[in-house]
Structures are given as C-alpha cells and as structure tokens.
Length: 117
Length: 115
Image (tube, rainbow over all chains, first blue to last red):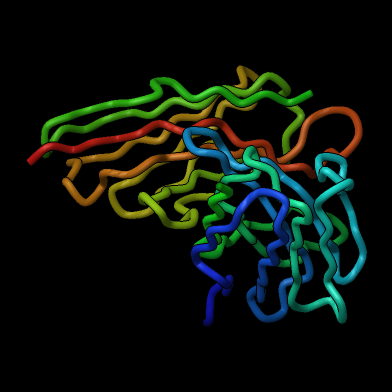
C-alpha cells in the first residue's frame, strides 16, 4: 500500500514570496490533515478535511495560509506572503474513516521543509 | 483544552537497556492515544494505537500502556538498539468540549541509544 505522498521535500524562499505544498493521501482515506511542526515542537494542526469539506481550520492563519482538497483526494497548502516565522516542516497526514467518527489511526508523509529567508 | 506532556524531553541510554517513555494528558475523555517515532528530517511513523477501552498494545519490542483515569501512557522499549534513536511523540485524540476528535501532540522525547 502506497503511503502519504508530499512534495516538494524542501523549499527555500524569501519572505513575502509565496509557496505551495502538495499532498496525496493513502487511497481510500477520507480524512486529510495538514500540520505545522516547528523545530523542537510537536506538530500543530493547521487544517483538517473530511472528504472535500473542512472540519477544523481554527489554527490556520487565514490571512496568509489557504488550503483546498478538490475532489476529496489530494490537497494543496499555500502560504502567501511568507513570513520568517513560517519556517517549519509541513506535514500531511491521512486517516481512514471509522464509523461515524474521525478517530482513525494517522499516517504521515515525509513532510515538506520550508525555510524562509 | 487538552494538554499533552512528555517526560523526559531527552534520554540517553546504553545499548541493551530497557527504557520507559512517559506521556501525560490533562483531559481523560479521550478516544485513543497514538505513539509515533520521528527520525531527523523525516515524517512521523505510527508505532502503536491504543483505544480508550484498551490497557495496552504490543508490537515487537515495544509495549504501550494506557491509564485513562490518571491521564497517563507509557511506551516501554525492551533491549534498546542504536537504531531506536529518534524522537518519540505521543498524541491524544479527544477531550471534553468542542473538536473532541482533535489530535493533540506532546513535544516528544529525544532518545539516543549509544553503542
């Protein structure tokens, strides 16, 4: 079974530029998550999708971050304009639906490391 | 608001030693708890998932226990090897209040196993 795919693995940009990250979840997984992980910290949830609908985006800085999951499969996370503090690893994860709840096991991709200069 | 704490933040042990990593959470109304491993520059690899109704899960040399009422979980690693060196993260699903399916992570324990 193929895992969660993410690209690019690394990206270096200057502040105020834009960047986009792509994620393809495990086939059949209804729930997709984007996490931000700053060095030395645990991952912080940015946005959670159930199929193509947003379940939780309470911690997404909506003035600069946007995400979409068209057709309920792959997803794109965009940052525009980037700030220095956005330097982090952006992790995508997916989980299968478990009955009527979103409590399935999470599977992560390798992550996209962003450096903002 | 659910908070997850992992102690110690870092641990260094000689090869072959048995060790315990600790995870505590403030809200016991959880659905499950998941332990992950993260190698430097990599994503998270799922190790064990314990449902709220379970007391422990085992996979090879790893054993995770859950005491929901006291808000604690431990990850036991038997006969540690240098290849076990990584950051181990604990994540709790759920808690009281809104977004009760939300996954909350600890900051992790950095484990170094010395040959």
